[in-house]
Image (cartoon, rainbow, N blue to C red):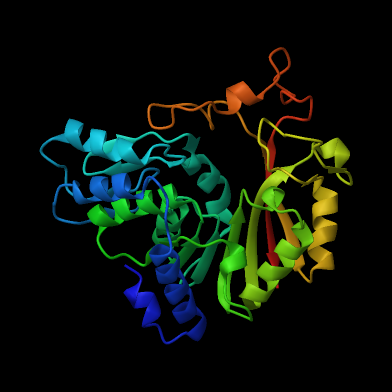
Length: 311
């Protein structure tokens, strides 16, 4: 599945392909046999990829939609979507199409080589292809999301949207020359946010663009930084949430210019919620029971900002 990357004329992309293959060969996840069995059980239908619209659609409609839905449920939880596979509509936890609607009017991806860090199951990669990207390489170390991408690929065919079982720390050293690097929902999970921004700077070509989406503090706290004592919105691995002014300072410190704050939107329980395809607790359970403007821990409820910055 990564053979075309290994055969690329770009040395960095070649290394990525080989590292992804090595990651697969070393994987010992306990659910891997079950996931592989589910992939093998997917019905063979003519492949197609209809990428325009909120829910990318893959493959022809299968005869037994109910059986396919049961098979696809083996890859629960589906976090990013919506998607349609073989006629089965997957209503994921996130209405990722809403985030894309906030992003897309500001993006020019025509002919771009894109890296998507923390890509999940590759949902945004499909939207990027529809928006003109030449190809998209997504990285995410969470194996179930890679399996979801493989299920999409089974119905879509060989499209230039890849999801590799790697994290940013697994990338080869040195410059890479990507036209665009997306980092959405990742920065606050990094213990050293400036190092994350600096590494992305190294991955971009000169004049390349960072597309950053992250949690931020309310407007009145632009220059502050929140470092949760234990959890934030019931998440254990949230280390640092800046105000937008402080975030701009970080970007300047790490070499970016033409910094533009495109959007600030509070996350609502209509955009992130429990569904049939993601049955675990979601945002509603992470908010304060009597004040939805706060998290369970008493911190400001999630607000997400979108920032563009050039190398």
